[in-house]
Amino acid sequence: MTALIKPLNKDQIKPTTKMPTASEEIWRYSRIGELDLDSYSPGLVTTKIAELGLLESLVSNITKVTPREPVDVFEELNLRNAQVTAITVARNQVIGEPIIITHSVDKSGVIVYPRLVIEAQENSEVTVVERFISRDEIKSVVIPVVDVRAAQSARVTYVAINELGTSTWQIGYQQAVGQRDSLMRMFTVALGGEYARVRAEVRLEGQGANAQQVALYFADSTQMHDFRTLQDHAAPRTRSDLLFKGAVKDTAKSVYTGLIRIRENATKSEAFQTNRNLILSHGAWAESVPNLEIETNDVKCSHASTVGPVDDEQRFYLESRGITPEIAERLVVLGFFGEVLDRLPTVPFISELRERVSAKLLGVKSGKAQS
Image 1 (tube, rainbow, N blue to C red):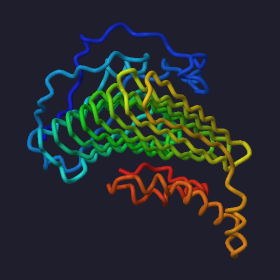
Image 2 (image 1 turned 90 degrees about the vertical axis):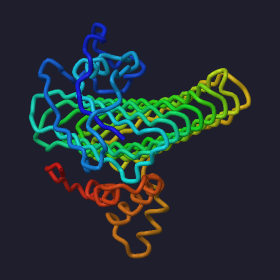
Image 3 (image 1 turned 180 degrees about the vertical axis):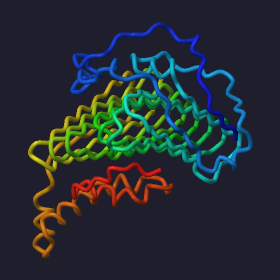
Image 4 (image 1 turned 120 degrees about the vertical axis):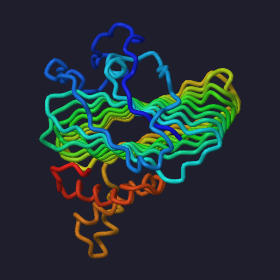
């Protein structure tokens, strides 16, 4: 395995595009109108790779990063200014321990552009955890991109953990492309940030490719979590499974819009999409919009979404057994997230998630990023 941190070749980038607005469907319900890019200056994120000494070399085989055409101005800005971490896993190589990458923003008034490229060659396996952290008093913008490329029979697990402070915005992009018989597991845990948006897309290009997308998000105070997903089936007998669960309290908001696209040649494909949301306060708000676009027959697809309060029967059952209302609600919410927590891989920081969710339910704020 090889790893590298370097800038991209800016000469390849085309001119900038215009700033999006909430009138565009892909930005509908967002808070993009509140962002003033002119009030921030380009900065650097501090990136650390745990157990870097285990890597064979610091010179990557990736000599040219060939990203997709940017979908909007933020992805293009990342290309122009990216701090790239590139990881290549050789053919037939299995990395037994997760690679932990931590990005920390330590200065206010800056906008930073971390970019992670994971290239898993044929029949290789790797798990990468990417953390984003900042203190509550740091006012900044983070525009991260992760680019996953899984070759034939490769197995990639990626976990993004948002622990940003309450004054930081995040506008992120996840791009994953899988070839024949590959497996890509994309996990997101979003607890931090003032406004945190992720555009998460998987494209299954090879027959038999498989993708899983799982997210847990919890917003309180004035936070907003915003997810836009795409499950793009471009080959036969491909399979995708998406499960996103979130909760909002106080005056927080969340948005989920997702699309399953089954292309004309993707016969015998299976695609599933589920988004469920809990509203824990009268002032909180959540929106869920699942969509299907199917261009062929002989496929299995389903989508489901729910938005609602804690189930009164569940709460009453617990309270009837002497449990206080506050603890009863916390147990119901933790049970709600249990399906997601059970799917998360066994990697550092994941075991602490239940405690962090409990802290949010109790209104406890650390005010300090954990490094």
